[in-house]
Image (tube, rainbow over all chains, first blue to last red; front, side, top):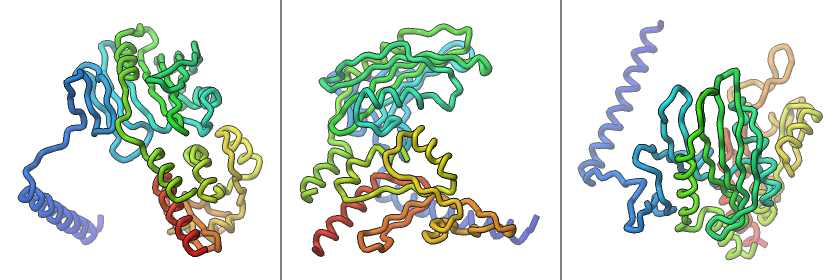
Length: 217
Length: 113
C-alpha cells in the first residue's frame, strides 16, 4: 500500500466532503427543507405523480419505484409477499417498451421475445387480445413461465398501448417459487392502476413533434 | 440500438441517417440486426479504422502489442451535412439529447440556406 497515495485520497475525499457540506448548508439557509412528494393524493381517490400522471395507486404496503436517471421504466410499485423467495409482485408504466415497430401487433410479437429474457424463465404466451385502454388502441398479453433450475416461476400481464406515434406499456409480473401459488389480488390492483391511468401532460415525444411541426419539418 | 430503431421516424424528419459500427464480422452482425429487427445499416469494421478515425479508444490503444485489434468503446458521433463532426459522447446514448441536438442542427442548416 502506498501511504502517500492513500493520504492523498483521504485528503481529496475530505476536501470534496467539505465542499458538499458547505453547499448543502448554503441551500439550507436559503430554503427551509421541504422535499417535493412524488405522489400527491387528490379528492378523486387517485394520486398525482409529479404532475405528469394521475392514477389509482395500490395499498400503502406497495412501495413506489421511480426512475431518477432514465432506464427501463418511468414509475412502478413493488410488494414483497408472504412465502419464500421470490414471492413478490411489481407493476410499472414504461414509456419505451422493447422493440422499435410502431405497429401494435408487430411490436407485441417482438416484445414477447425479449420480455424476461435475462431471467432464464421459459415464458409462453397464454393469451393475446386487442383492447382499449382509456380510449387508446392496445394489445393485452398474458404470459407464464418457469425456471426449474432456479426454483422460480413468473406470471405476467402486459398492455402495449398506442399513444400518438409511439407505443407505451404497462407491465405486471408476479414471482413465485416453483411450489408457490399465484394470487389474483395484485393483478386486480394492476388493472385498477392501468384503467385509471391518465396522462396529464404531453410527453417528450409529443412536445418534440410539436417543435418539428413549428420548424416546418 | 433499439432506442435508435424506435426513433427512426423522427430521424427521417430531421434528414438524419443512423449507422451502427461494430468490430464484429458481417455474419454475426446480420444475426444481431435481425434479432433486434434493426432497420438501419450496421457496418462491420473488423480492422478498426473507423474506431480510430472517430476516437473511440480514449485511453486504450487501437492495436495490442501483438497486432490484434483492441475493442473500441461505445461512442455516439454526429456528423453534419458538410462532414464536420458536431457531437461526440461516450457511453449509452441519450436519445432525447440526440434528437434535440439534431433539431438545432437542422434549424441551423436551414437558416444558412
